[in-house]
Length: 300
Image 1 (cartoon, rainbow, N blue to C red):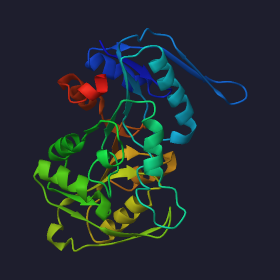
Image 2 (image 1 turned 60 degrees about the vertical axis):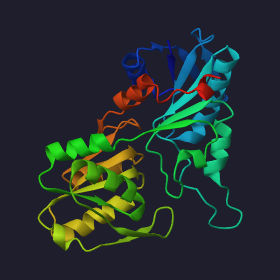
Image 3 (image 1 turned 90 degrees about the vertical axis):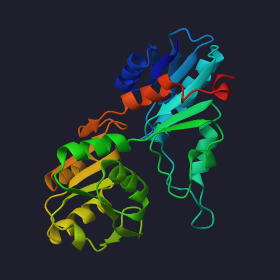
Image 4 (image 1 turned 135 degrees about the vertical axis):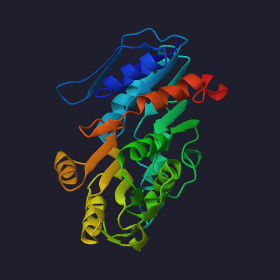
């Protein structure tokens, strides 16, 4: 029987996964010493067992050392295998070097993580210039896609929808969701001018006037792109759009703005937040139970 451990803040998801995948919930203590250093203690027997360590990586920098210590100790205690379930996988944006001297953090972070884990399971990683995680990670990886959940919700709750992406990067998710739901889709064009400054321009949406717009993006952090898209659609005469995001990294203030200026702001629980209505636990558990997340290289 597999055993699931939660890093702080991931207890609910780990508990649900253990139950849905007929596993056991392990006990892990992680806390800070007064000087800020991290204390880790594994309190469950993991000898010769497949271990899943659950940790969404929405705020990776303060979490990474504790995560590494926990994974290393699980291996030291004789775990048969140690896999990371990271519903949100960080450090995927910097996937190429744009200016001399820039750190290629997507690859560096991958090298750090895979020192401690034999496998990676995640939900819709931000693959912009990569065809798959195999181009970034050397360990086996499994990707859960949330498109079926979004498509089912749109089909059941939105009258005559058109799915719209706020930029070209969102096209891979927008097309998948719209195709599954059997509805049309389009995307804006975006020019990034800085970490928090973007300029998006409208495509010709004339053919879709009268439809209910559903804005979909994989990540909402600063909210700038989504806010611009909302404003353009309202100025163009569309009714209030719905806003759907797979991974919500935004502040409470940004989330409030999106709720107040749309027909609804809905996210998944890959990152715990008050707007989460799409539960990824069953999707991840289905992958684990079906064996899609297991391989001979993982068990080796």
